[in-house]
Image 1 (cartoon, helix red, strand yellow):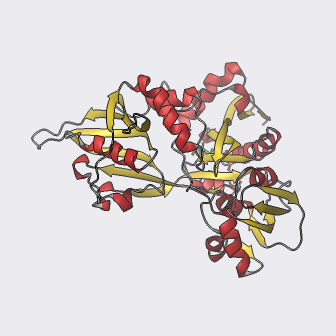
Image 2 (image 1 turned 135 degrees about the vertical axis):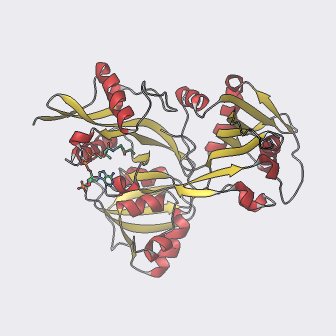
Length: 401
Ligand SMILES: CC(C)(COP(=O)(O)OP(=O)(O)OC[C@H]1O[C@@H](n2cnc3c(N)ncnc32)[C@H](O)[C@@H]1OP(=O)(O)O)[C@@H](O)C(=O)NCCC(=O)NCCS
């Protein structure tokens, strides 16, 4: 059996798509996703006796990393045909990918996992939770009934793009794990969901667009039952401030015939639970979100801003990336940090998976220590590490890829 590892050529991209469509049970022909079209140089495949047997790809994303831009590999298209599974093909592709990503200056890798079990062994740790809402518009009411200052207007989805982009960029800039959206990603959002696409833009009293909803609606007949009988899927939305938040939900509340409005992506720190008169009306569900891997500790830690001044020496354990298996000294001035190799006796000793959870702000050092995922030389160091690594916002990625 001859195994070759290399990127797919342009003429092999249709086979790449077929393999990915097969493993994810997509309809045939494969559906167009929300993701940018694949390029050969982003792929990495295993060929067994000349046949494409396993695939792996990484989009060259720029991601907000606690408010700073960071070159990030967006892992996607991971699949192995059934007859070649459990023979180590994915492991080989993943191990190669880390070295390639490091060479390309991508110090972070992120993904949405079909199973977390596949990826944690490779050093990926959870970096965000995925929150969804499933609410009946007639139950929308705020504990403080102050009305929004402006108005939301229904706009053709294509026409709303420039204003949605403006709002998105302003929201994403200071945040954590949000992606810089290239045009293909916006086009992808316009294709998501089932039914007709609509957009509503919320304009504050000043006339500025400060919020939007991109959604689909469809009728789900429930003959003999009292109306409403429509379902709405919110495929993308954002609100810059509380006034826009009220504006967006006030607009939604006016949809008398909508029985259920599903929000697939909601930030973990969304204020809905604190603001709704009946928080349970949101039917909030929480699952695992983005998995993140620190591919290059030195670069990744130097790229993000920090909440507090202080110095820490970290001993990082990484079986797969020997360049990470080392001590690093992090010197934060309360904003930026310098990261140097070496350092005295470590303050924290942790596997790269735990560092991924810590540096993404998903969990604090104290929590990780309580759960046996990190060791501290001294409990006081944990409190310092909690303050230094705290992020301005919880991780949130509204893009599927
Ligand atoms: C997941 C998938 C790509 C694995 O491919 P593979 O070539 O069989 O993987 P490998 O043989 O290299 O296995 C890699 C490791 O992951 C483990 N693993 C593989 N699939 C797993 C699963 N579904 N659940 C838990 N662990 C899994 C293996 O036991 C192996 O562990 P080890 O290297 O520590 O012994 C393949 O099963 C597949 O195509 N699944 C359907 C599509 C999918 O889920 N893709 C992931 C999308 S995010």
